[in-house]
Image (cartoon, rainbow, N blue to C red; front, side, top):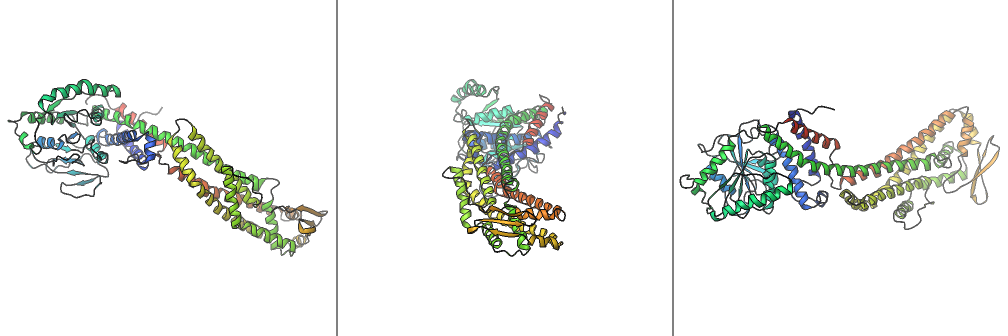
Length: 628
């Protein structure tokens, strides 16, 4: 068994594979703030789709910004909480300056704001953070909806340590907050300390409490700031939280109950932040600053313990996504295998019914007639037969309509599925076409009828029904082109054979001695073959004429050009089979693959899924528990 990769190599590989996972799920709409119906169905509902999106974004950010060691000594303090709990006010209180804009409007902060010391780049050692985001200053104008973060330097000489970066973050519980989730997660994943701001109105909000557990399980240091809560309610809020809410959620998740240090702030009016900056008058503000600075000055996220916890959390969150991707890949593989098998069967049936069967001689009949035409065989009946063959091999509109009706009958059992009026080549193709559509329709129906079937089959079934008319039209057009190409290839083969025959004038004279006789009403045609023993008749049924002319050719050429003629016949059959294979690829293989692509399922390579799971296991195993 191969040894696990060292953590540094595994981390780089895991980050690369995680980007492939993100692309696959993004292409399927599963990372959209408002995912499409297919994504919702795949995830198992709107709530499950939202949870999956959060898990993927969080796992990716943990790998890039927490498991991957940072290249600086900065300490990030991220202020986080629900709408209207006063997060921006807490940022200003910690900085003892009016840095973050405040507003009574819920959801006012829509993008992360970083407040580093003057001259400090907050992401200098975190090059992988905020990929694809626009970095702006406080007064920059960016189009609405763009993913961005703002960087505003603290004033020179501020009271915070130079290595500390303060972050203000968007809500995660206001209307439309899902649009700003990627930015919130990027900021949180950088945190050496998360200041969780809550209030008497928000301490029991499920979405916020879930985040507390997510962060705690991922190894984040947390400090709770109870804000906008009257002193008479503080004890009741904290008891309810510690004795009821957190234990209940822990039991549901099978997790430990987080124990959070708490600092409560006095209730203040909006815009009265400066009242708390005087530590002498309001010591709770000073206690909060001290509580923030102590853990922020500790070992930080580069310690092995927090990195290991983050890697384990990322692995748990990725697991469900990988399971979904594997299930989607398995359903897609079943479809791809069915298409490949039926395309091969299409070509095989055409070969057996038109090119290889002992009783099928139509392509060689046409070759015979073309050879005789090129040899200037002047015969009224032969010329009439040639004109008849030419007329039918152009596949006029009436025959295209017959092809369509044949397929429609086969699909919906509305009538006779035989088409004896079609030319033999068209009949072989049309029968194979109907069989293919019927077989693939049965695959979809059988998969969709199974209990607990994958939503891929529902989406594919709808797309299949919508695509059937287009498939039939494409087949009709391809068939017309195929018949024209067959005629051209037969003429080319005949020309090469005649060119070889003309090298032997005596043989040409013998062939021209073949006579054609007709019976009454011209319903039968026969050939008087020199040295063949007399007149031989065979019925002219549809387009099929006995290959007696070619037989005569071969008998006369056994000692002259037999090998050459036989080789040209094999070439003709090979080219016709290649043409059928190309027709099947054009009409079926590529369009039916595109049909599956359009179902909205994540198309993740199975090897990527297995590699990523292995890399994450190696990272967790390679990082020791505890603080390094």
